[in-house]
Length: 173
Ligand SMILES: CC(C)(COP(=O)(O)OP(=O)(O)OC[C@H]1O[C@@H](n2cnc3c(N)ncnc32)[C@H](O)[C@@H]1OP(=O)(O)O)[C@@H](O)C(=O)NCCC(=O)NCCS
Image (cartoon, rainbow, N blue to C red; front, side):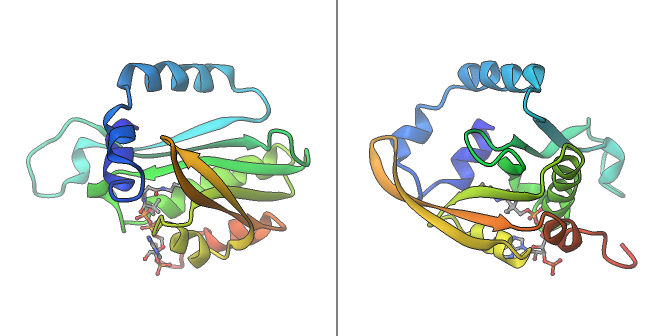
């Protein structure tokens, strides 16, 4: 989490904020999130097995990416929220982000969510990924991160089936 934030948000969030992130604090937060599991919350982890590096030397299994979400806090109870989605640098553009979105949207649909939204920083180029998957910009908010002003945008898929269709396996994959 800390490593992927530092690479993904370099040049977007204040360097002091990224440098000050604590692995120990994040680990405690994630432990709570994973164990709690309330409000239809789930975390999906993409793992690259040692056998994925065809022809290369055997590598121990590694986390390639993760996504989490649940029913939206303080919002319409039938709306789901994708809270995190990160694919590690070496594993991007291989379809892992789409698969994680698929797993999470199928889960949110199964726990009764009829639509889904997420927040992304306006300066984050990943917002084009969400737009590519059919997310519609529905809200913009001025926020502060690490004391610095920035802007976040809400992307929404309503009904949730739009996201499930956009992340369905491509024919032949
Ligand atoms: C955004 C992110 C999750 C995408 O994951 P990924 O595994 O590289 O994406 P995929 O390979 O599944 O891409 C699926 C499709 O989206 C496209 N795509 C991927 N990243 C994109 C981007 N930044 N902008 C536009 N399209 C993008 C791919 O080309 C692919 O297109 P296709 O439909 O022609 O196949 C990844 O780049 C990431 O972790 N970024 C940094 C972390 C971050 O900012 N997360 C969001 C926090 S809100």
